[in-house]
Image (cartoon, rainbow, N blue to C red; front, side, top):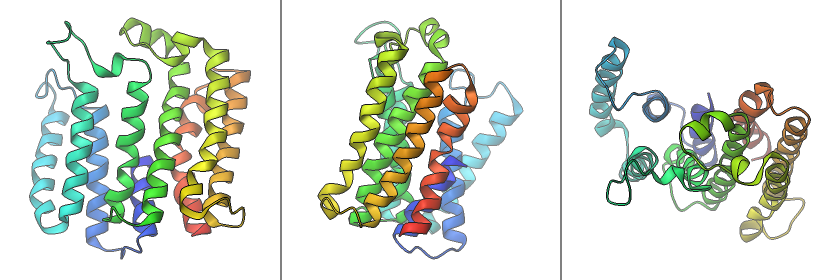
Length: 247
């Protein structure tokens, strides 16, 4: 749902016609998310569903020649590169070293790769609205992934990841996230100036208030996944709905 919402947001900003090409774009984005988060790279053929998934990828990339533009292929390549940086081990630096094990790098890669679904859906890199939404989603999804880290401290420690909640502790992490959330309001300034009546400002303000409420609930009880996981991830759906309303 989150991936579909971001692709649809980009399409709405660029006035892309709702047709089979857009549906295919959304389908391909969902395959990409599945590939990054649910696919077992170590034993890709160990289960039937993974073989079925590979078949879907092959068929989808065959159709992509007809349905996708050069800009979208460029964005897909960029997302794929970020996925490799997220997953790959770099033996020249150290045994089992991964970039995502560095402090905040994992969250940065997640934020940028998810935000890239905006220009992917828009089929455009030059629109000011697309650029604004790319940077805003990068920040919101990036620090949203840190909120999820709060619920995964034990798991991340077992996997050798240095997340912000592990490094700073949960109370200080929440203070930093509240500050980042507030500062994200200024992303619209290069595009519309400090204009409280602009749609970008109003849109940003509503999302920031929603995220501030989530952070408040996480501060009260950070073990409830309804706040750290589900409603946090649904920020992407909220972004789509607000884009339809304000733009």
